[in-house]
Every structure is written in C-alpha cells, then in structure tokens.
Length: 482
Image (cartoon, rainbow, N blue to C red; front, side, top):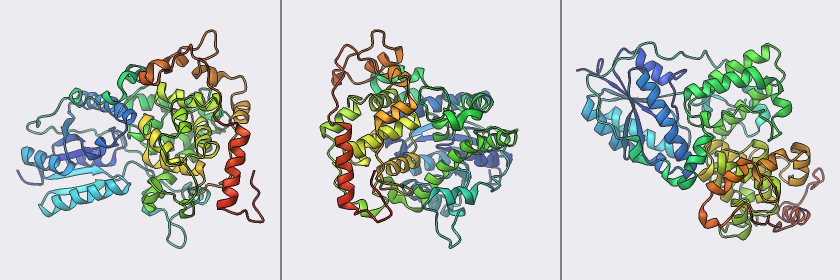
C-alpha cells in the first residue's frame, strides 16, 4: 500500500462533529480510508473534573454518530506522539491529520508530532476549524495584534468566513479497524463523584443536539437576545457554550445562521454575532499573548495585593456558595448543578471574588476550570482578567459590581436566586435542592441549614478595593474611582 492509497488517521480533539469540519471533510474527499481517532493524552489528563465529565459525554455521542455513518471512533490512552506512532505502525497509515489548537502547550505538542511524522515520510497536517478567523490572519494596520475588542470587531465583522461544508458524502472504511479501548474504562465521570447523575440531567451532548439548540435559538430567542440575555432567570441565551467548547458546533454555521436572521430584521442577531466575535477575540489574545492564561496580562498588576491563599476563608465560602450574598451564591450553585453559569452571574461572582474579597483572579479561574462543563481556556482566562481589571480591554478596571444592585436590575423578582438558593424557602425549588446532592459531603451543608451572614459588608468591600486601586494605580485627572 502506498501513501496515495494508505489510510489517513484523523486525530479528533476539540472538534467532535462531522458537519463543517474542514479537516475531516478533506480527508474523506481523498477517497482514502479514514480512521477517526481520539486520544486520552496529556491534554485530557490536565482537564478539570467537570470538563472531563462533559468530554466523556461528548465522545459517547460522537462515537454513536460515526457508527451511524458506518465508521468508528478509535480510542487510545497515552502520550499523543507515542499513541499515534503505534496506530501508524498497526494500520499502515500514510497520513495523520488534525484540527489546530491555539494555546502554546498544544502548539508545542502538535509541532513535535508534525515534525516527527513529516521527517519519517508520514504526511502530518493541521487544519482550521475551531474558529472563524485564524488568529494570525487578523492584524492591525501596523501588523500587530488587537488588544481592544471594538476595533477587533470592526476588523472582522464584514469578512467572508466562507461557506459551511456539508457532512462528508463519502466515507471509505479501512481494510481493518485497529483495536480500541472502551470509553467506560476511562471513567471520565469519576472526578465529579456523586454529582455525575445530577450534572448528566442538565447536559445534551453531541452535534445533533447542538444543531437543534441552534435552530431553537434562531427561531425563538435571537430576536430578544440583546434585551433579555442579561436576565439569568429567563431562557434567553443560546445555551451553546459547551458545544462550542468541544467543537460539536461549527462557529461558521452559527455565524451564517445569525447573519441570515440579521438580514431578516432580527433585533438581537448582531449582538449574538458580536458574542461569537468575543470568543474569537479571546483566542486571538491567547494565541498572540499566551501569558493571559496564567499571568496578569497587564504586568503592572503583578504587585497588586490580591490574596493568593487557596485556604483563605473568603475563597472557601465563595467556592461553596456560602458567601451570604444571594446573587453570588446562586451563581455558584447553578454551576454545581448544571455545569454552567449564566454570563451575567459569572461577572457578578468574579467581581465579588476579585474586588470585594480581594482574592486573585487565578484562584477563581482555576476553580471554574474544575467546575464548568463549558470550560474554554481562552474565554475563561480573558473573562476573569477582564472582570478583575488586569486584562485587555478591562475598562474601567476599577468598576466594582454591586451584587445587590445587579440583582435588583437583572433578577428583580428573585426568580434566579430562588431557583438556586434553598435556605429560608418553605418549598425550595428542585434545582436548589439538587445543589446539596451534587456537592461533596465533606462540605457539611444541608437545605435546613441557616443561610450565612456575609463575611464582609458590600460597601466595606467596595471601599477596600477602591483604596487598593488608588494606592496601586494613582488616578489620572480623567479617571474617577467609582
């Protein structure tokens, strides 16, 4: 068998779909046998509990979809290069292809894989597919990268993203399938422990479910999206974040559908397009300034007096949804039950941690990376640094969200808080009670317990944060701390 007709190993990662998948489409179009592979490699090992759990559900759904097409998903556990080398040896594959990643760790690993295979006469290629725009293809007039969202949006909003590709119409099976490991043997749900059955009730994994959600959003919600998206008790958002995170939905398909809605006069369509570009901006920043993932993007924040102690009592209470601030606690409890958190609630919870409690954003970012089923490395890092003030486009950095006024504005009848906070309610909602079944028993919490008193008064926390900002960053004449 020559390289021209030998199998292509397609290495799936965060791209678990078949529709509008440039790399898989190209592999199938060659007419050569294609062997879909997923590796439980170094990257999967590093995942937090909830993202790993959600990945397991996504893999099961993706494997079922491939099987429906007459294909199969080969599962192997081990370091990427060694696992792929073994598969090439077993199958006689002449090519290893994949969809690109954009963080520096993934880039370094993929570069090593590509170098080894190409130097051994195996065709190794990477393809786009996770983003609308490759990060290096969006540049300022001086050739640099964008550091502020608004000009980034203006630079890309009229760009042609190209047509969405259909699912492959032709799929050639290999002469034999290599051995695969059982997904169940990976125990992807083990890290979330007893929360697994509760989280599972709130998930709808897979490409088919993602496309159905997109249809529902475009048909029923996108018109009111701009006006209603900040109200966490309303079913007003797309609920697509976990699907984008795992590549179960192509951003290009969502882009085209939203543009169609905008041309049809939908009032909220442009705002949804801007949210898609906000995700692009996060990846643009991560690729061009990798420090955003683990260090203050603005170096002048390196000496800011945040607490970095994970045993800080305020951080522990925040993690457990026990701050005594209902809007913050509701946000955290929603995350433990559903694996997700409404975006407005994320901003409130993050602001409270980094500003009222003066706790380092990285502690909060790492906790979200452990607990969110829609965890995304770029969006998580940029979102935390944006709220904390240390990141790009974080203006004004000294803005302190008041959870009470935020609740009055975006949850005026308390529907969101009541949905997630059981203490004090005669008949708590089922979702509020699920929180106590999802959390570790060691936390010792029950719905019959007394709701906690805040560790710090909101006004005192705000004043402390503003004083710290004034000391670290003396205000300019045109800036007013508020």
